[in-house]
Length: 276
Image (cartoon, rainbow, N blue to C red; front, side, top):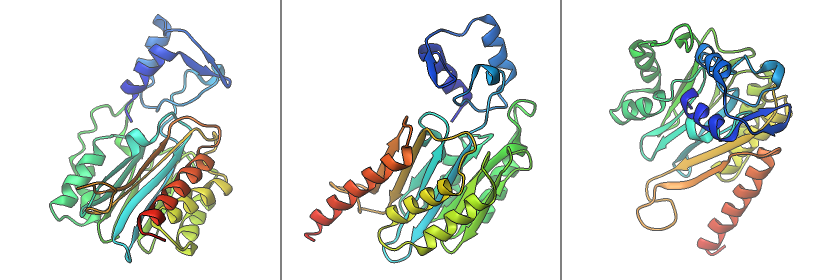
């Protein structure tokens, strides 16, 4: 999710400072600060931290269910509406998560390269190789973090050396977990273990990974938004719908709790449709 998109929001809504919303448009000095600080992603910050623009401090999970053929991802972050810039998916193609010092174009690029038949590991190498690194001082390629999974659950993940600590990833069978500005490595470890240990629909497995990541410490700055997407050809409700599930919790003190409520509603709907 780009800094420019967030700057537009700030101009309208003001700064979120010390947990309260202060309605004011950026003045000249603030605009100068924004121009000088775009190597940091926009987040909820205190007055003392307003000159530091944090990256998309995120933990996300990509997963595949070989029984259903569904593929998808889920994410939680301490930024507003994180789902708008992190998750990208297409049925019969795969899913991509883009985060940290993010170039949002990595999402559609990854989907297009998967569509062409490229393996996830080669997709990662190709995207990095072709990145022109247009703002190395502000938005360095060294801080990128992204994960690419194809429609069969093969996955490759990259965490740049300048992604904010703790940053890293772990890959399991048909699953990857990745994050930055986390409490520690235990976050991604717990996410993989929860995904692999959970039974049922892919949405519940992805959700379990988010819950486990948060229980292990999650994003060091806290919580604000979450999102989930799952795709499979013609598996959504209505006609010619490849979207099994697309959910976003854009602003909440407990976004993962709210995500569980939505996932459970979707599960009851699936059961009704199947006559169970």
